[in-house]
Image (cartoon, rainbow, N blue to C red; front, side, top):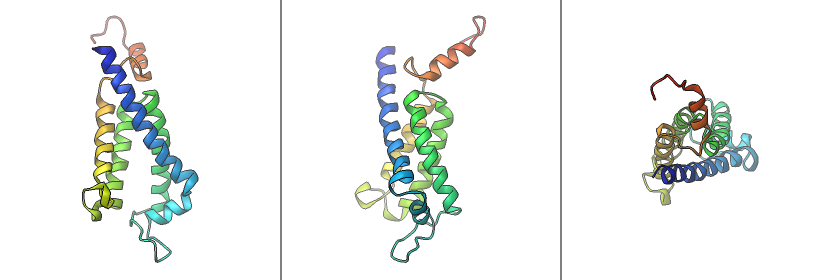
Length: 149
């Protein structure tokens, strides 16, 4: 059962990691930070409705790098509680600023996907990491033979 649990968590981490890396990559290399900043901010030019995120440029950099590095950390299985909280916070911001006015359903550009991603990264972040993660081996090295587990 432990092998199945570790494998399932690895598959979930890989899936989430790829999704977050893809979104971070899009912000950095496809849209670019400048266009992401405009989208996050006031939406200039007038035909583009922005999200109204305060400190839009800093938020664009933050979201980009949290998604890129957080996605990589998920894949490697390292710093999972920290990464889970950062990515969940990013998804809460995306749901609130980017999708709240569109309702729940993803088909109408709602916040459904942000909710699923945010809860999933929290679950992965606070689950026992399993043997197929760096956190497992880092934790194992920190525990002394006399310490209770």
